[in-house]
Image (cartoon, helix red, strand yellow):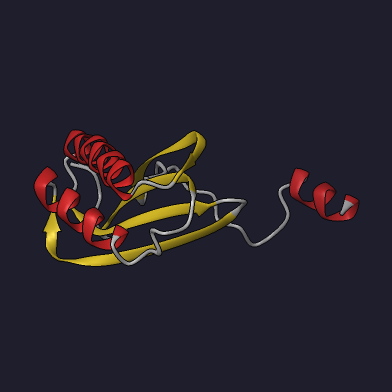
Length: 129
């Protein structure tokens, strides 16, 4: 790795450097539970809260979300992520919440859960206004 780092330090390589600012592709929120959660109602309530926080982040950025994903970490440490493409890009909290709850229903809710998260993904060609 040493020679490669030296070349990078000298500015060698084919990486193009631009002044274009980096733009986030998504916004997400998640929560890790102190103890395993086995009650589906608790998971649904947490997903609703997370979806609302994500929707507020999306609205603050003024960029519509095109996909909504839910991440679930089962005990002891198996993490699964599922997502859905929205019918049309939106920043509406109700649409993001509805999609997140629908995706949550795709998971096996009989297993103990340690973490749950919600992510809203922006369109690839969107830029902030």
